[in-house]
Image (tube, rainbow, N blue to C red; front, side):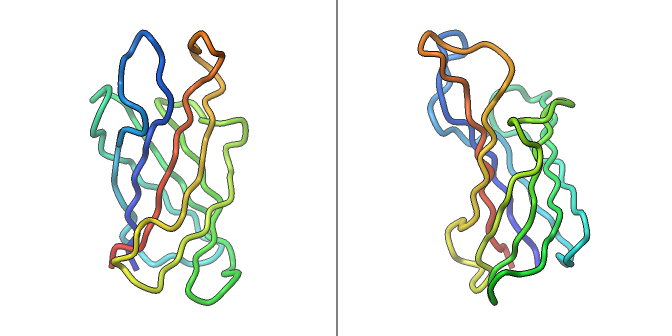
Length: 131
């Protein structure tokens, strides 16, 4: 089974001017997802800095329900762990490859500039079965 990964950035600050919920990078994992195994994918930048390095690691957990995959997800951007916890839970439906992304993991940015409201960006990883 292959999975498609999409990385979105939510939030807006005055100095960079990008739009809310913009697709920043995408990629996939094209190997069997076996519980206990670690799978890493380097995503292709789509927006923002083309020199950015976006790496997603999924540690596959035992399935909680038939037709679903469970994992612990981490997002490393340019060598920095995004979010206060680098290992967030993530589950997605694998019953049909044409489904919308059913798995979402959110990584709040904990470093860098914030805007006047004190809000920092949130990185959202969307996952779905691709075949």
